[in-house]
Length: 118
Image 1 (cartoon, one colour):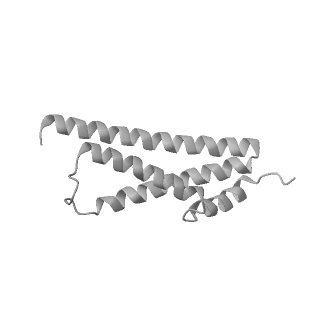
Image 2: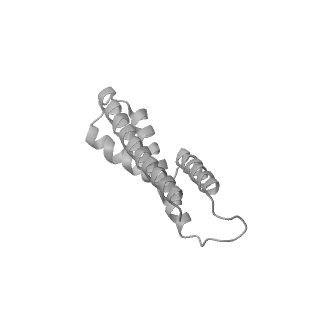
Image 3: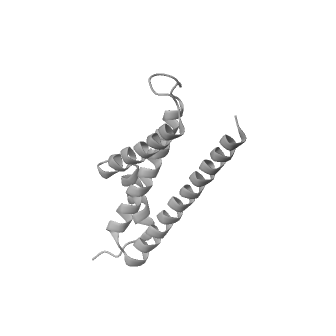
């Protein structure tokens, strides 16, 4: 492995950590806004977003178990494509019923937030 490859991989890793921190911060902000505004729809949206992030992590880790080789060689462009593809699949999965994580989170968080009953 060349030094340039190591630097590139380091930058990619750092950008993934930064994106993860941003996702966490966005989720916290969405929860706070939902709590302050007594907004159940905002809470549902935050839970679905969290589920999408979780499903994306699952897909990435499952993809790591696939044996390299085959028709398309492993490359930086392929990694970018697969990452974007996993994100879109995760978003689509969480739009519907998803895997059920968003529903369970909503039920638990709505009890803790105590939305005013109208």
